[in-house]
Length: 69
Image (tube, rainbow, N blue to C red; front, side, top):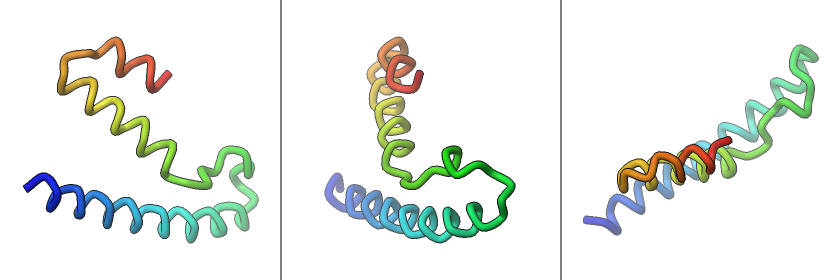
């Protein structure tokens, strides 16, 4: 069950990476958002979310908060 779920997570992560690459080029071409504010990869966002969920499920909310801020 765990490996099946991990496969789903990995596929979704790859799909988000592709969407991010496509959207980054579009957002930068609009000249509305400064390039430094455009996320180039979902990896850092995903890792922060994962850290929060992992810590939260273990009732370590202080630890989760540190991971995000």
